[in-house]
Image (cartoon, rainbow, N blue to C red; front, side, top):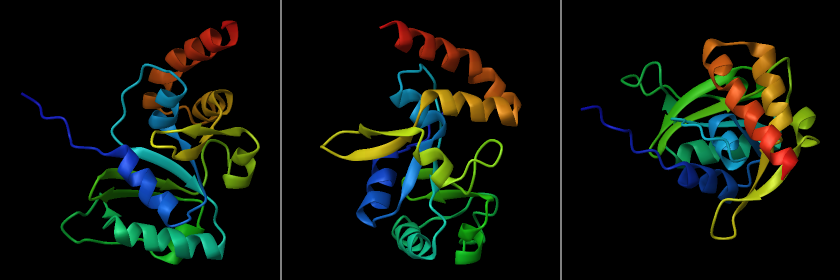
Length: 165
């Protein structure tokens, strides 16, 4: 029997919020918040890459005990230069996997996404900024990874249903 990992998405997001990190939720959790029937095993965020926000993000990552997933035995942690880049930092935290992304799709950074995002309540009065479903679909189409292609029709159907209600 396969065991489902203990992933505490809300706890990860709350630590980011408590540290004042400016971020936009993207990926599977964002899809689920939009009503798409998808499963995901990590939290994906695009963060604002300003020096001040990177300092706050570093504090949050320290609190989350975040380190790179590819070498868990080495406990490697991202530094400010990693977080200032457009690259993807694939981390594991005490609450589960967290992907800290500089960009998504064809170079969509925080400021590009912000105008296509909306606040959403994730419980206990906690609000986060979530990328719009149309831009999420667009970014997955732009990248074209097999796992993105697999969820595209589900996301498109979710968007069609939302537009008719």
